Length: 300
Ligand code: G1P
Image (tube, rainbow, N blue to C red):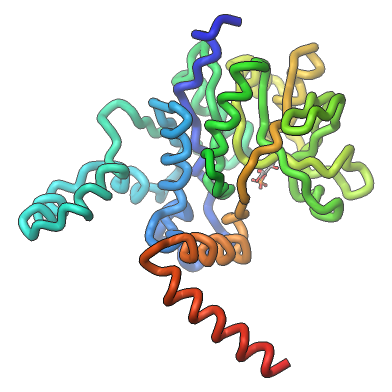
């Protein structure tokens, strides 16, 4: 495959979910707009994609996600007001939230038929190139952004690639799980993939995390796979189909810390970690946490 064909410039962001785990907040705001400190979840995903060379951002949305569209649009009133009051730093910060016209597209998934189906909804915008998929619930703090790590690895491997992380064996059934053919350390050649296997049937404890580099063939597979776990069209099954057809699929053990922001505990952990990483908050917040812990210890 030529280098040109391995260039990854498009990413799909499946954001159609109802976010029921975060009700009542998600009654009126999309989960992806909820903030870690002061940045919406989706901003972390977009920044990671940009760092990896993504230029076209495809959102698979649903009813009630209008706030996402507004978030990425220029807000002339706000900008004029900040300009007038000389708040240049805030104006500068807003730049990373403004998307150029034509760089972002919204496609509706009108039935919640699963992650595979959500990705498939974007098929006409992908055309005949490899593309990335980012699940914004998986926030990954890495010195080098994780999708960039994967794009670099993908230049060498081609095929299809999923982010992978070793999880405790009893947790494997919450994920897509890789059946390992050859473990090369960072890279793992995969001979099978199972979505949310029963604990005793998990082929390993190497779990799929929400970053993918896929080819249009996977989109074609999605049209053919039947409903999988939970009756949903699973992306995992469509990628596994590639292996059955004799094509290469890799897991990539990324460097970085992953937070499961689809769960309340994960969201809170990410909030604490990102707050402690901020120069403007670290001292005060760390002090508060220390006090809190010492009170807890005293009680015990
Ligand atoms: C999805 C994928 C699963 C993957 C997980 C990572 O599941 O279907 O294969 O392991 O994301 O976060 P979900 O968590 O949306 O049920």
